[in-house]
Length: 162
Image (tube, rainbow, N blue to C red; front, side):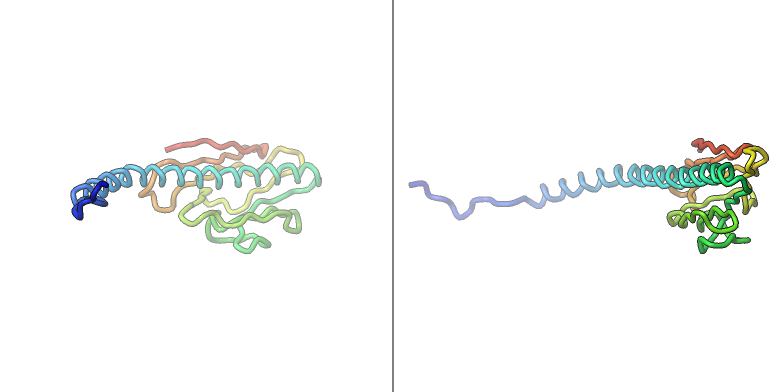
């Protein structure tokens, strides 16, 4: 028969536990900023894509309805807002609301150089040209941004800048 000693060691020693905690802290210090950058990039890409998709929709609705369609910032999804920012949301209107976009995720800012309303003509020319900057509201995390440019024909495109 094998006898077991009362002094058989089980578990971790204090030194082993401290080494494991130190390694975990180092991995967290490396991983958390990378995760924040990836999350920021995803939020910026999604907000810029939503804005470009709304411009495409407004342009196609203007052509389809043979009427001027507006894309304007809106907090309530029904009426155009005269103040605030595009991050509060926007609405596509042709007399009545066609589609409303909810507010951007918190911490995202969308600026358009003072433009509050874009008009899309039924001729696919003469639309309001604009450049929207989608960036972090407080630029302490990440330095990238997206610029959504809408040309005079109403076609949007997105580019990534720093």
